[in-house]
Image (cartoon, rainbow, N blue to C red; front, side):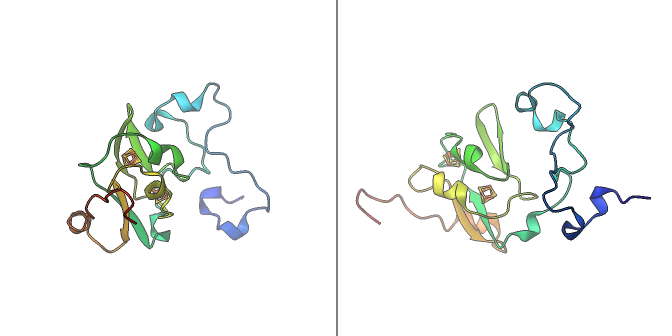
Length: 137
Ligand code: SF4
Ligand code: SF4
């Protein structure tokens, strides 16, 4: 009996294999469907916890966020949760800690900052930097 792809290790996959995220038999624009209503393929990592790859994590400061959606747009892992153009938080089950969301956050100070994975978010929020003045590095 062939093994389910869910039970396979990365080194058991055929080189060059295409792992589809969504059920290819369903017609329509998947981008128009809310994540919880999508038809995920068996090879999608939606139900897999992959956050343990991370050593640093983004912490979100709701007080500073202007809901610009840059972080949502640029996150390579779809790990920023947004609903109706409002930032809702970080999906730590899938975030890999790349820091791109922090780089593209335009507020001063930033509304997302990277902290050690072991730092509690409540503590991280007490360490937020002050607003930088013009010309200040
Ligand atoms: S750190 Fe990277 S993976 Fe995590 S939310 Fe930010 S952009 Fe996405
Ligand atoms: S990039 Fe920054 S300001 Fe924009 S939505 Fe994300 S956290 Fe908020």
